[in-house]
Image (cartoon, rainbow over all chains, first blue to last red; front, side, top):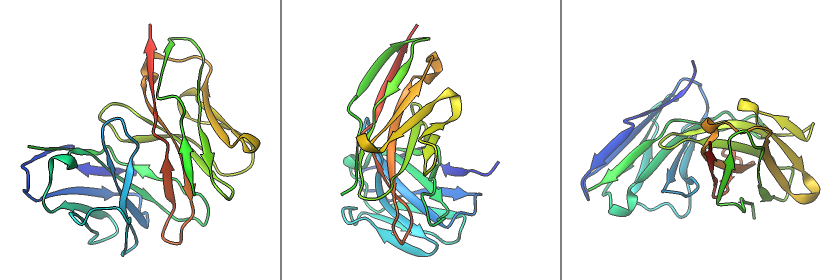
Length: 114
Length: 115
C-alpha cells in the first residue's frame, strides 16, 4: 500500500543533542510537510517542500531545519533540542491538483527530550 | 485570515448514541474542508473531505459531514457511535497557495465513549 512512513516512532534525545527525524513516502507526491503537535493541541506547520523548494513558516525557530534529498525522503533536523521541543512530529504529503488536495499523514514520531 | 473553530473541547457520548462535532471556519473563498481523526499516539487519518458539489459528504467508519455555507460550518455526524470511535477529531480548511495547499486546523475535539 502507498503510504507515509516515519522513523523512528519514538525518539529520546538529550537536551542540546542534535536529532534527526525521518519521513519517507511511496505516494510520489510533490509536497512534503512537517508539523509539530504538542499535547492536546492542533498540529502546527513548521515548513514544507514543494518539490525541491523549501518553504519555511515565519514563526518556525531557526533550531529546526529540513532536508529533502529526493522525492521520497524528507528529514527534520533539530539542531539543539530544548525541553519545549518535546512533541509529536508529523509528516504529511500531498499532490497539488489546482484545487483542494488532501494531505496524507504518517503515524508520527514522538520526541522526548531529557 | 483563515481560521477554524471547534467549539467543543471535549464530548462524552454513550455507545450507540448519535454524535455531532461542530466546526466553523473563516475563509474568503470556496473552502476545502476536511475532518481527520487521531487515535492516541497515532498520526491523522482522513475521515472525509468536501471540495465541491453535494454538501453532504460521506466518509469512512460511518461518518458524514454537511457543508453549510450560510453558517460557515462543516459539522461531523455519526448516527450510532462505537467505543472504537473514541479519539481526537480535527477539522481543517485547506487554503490554496502557490507552494502547496496549507491546512488550518481547529484545536480538536476529544471524544469519550462510555459503555
